[in-house]
Image (cartoon, rainbow, N blue to C red):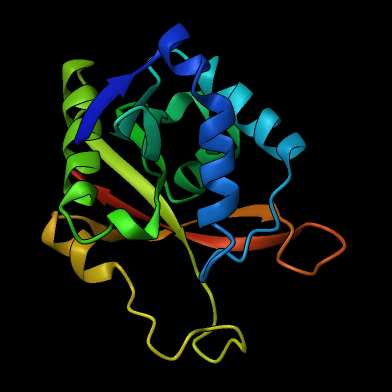
Length: 194
């Protein structure tokens, strides 16, 4: 039996090891190609859980966590503010949606919408007027791109999100097989922007 619930604070802290494992598992696939480590996850999720206003929308199958989707005020994410500053866009009213990770067997059941609904409701309850997330930009001719890959752009557009002009972050992680982290361009998408 699937259930979707928002979690924060200590209720969420207990789930962080499972969220870390989901991130490592899911983001290994295209387009992220993430060679995850528990040390990286501990730093990343530690910053998230210590940010005021955080939430994770969690999907459970019985007692098993099978998906999660995080969100925090953008003001708590120093490494993501600069692209907004550079573009002359106010970031103080932006609620940032982090990752959405869901095991493959649970996809196609409307849980992506549940993740967005939960994060949008949380942002609204805290008084935020804008929501945004970013997605990695990979070349169309990348050798690891699966031939049948279907981008999520259509889903995001259906949810009334659009690419934010000139707002691109650069985040670093190890790609599969890389010895060191490299910076990847991350296109911001937003809703509620003029």
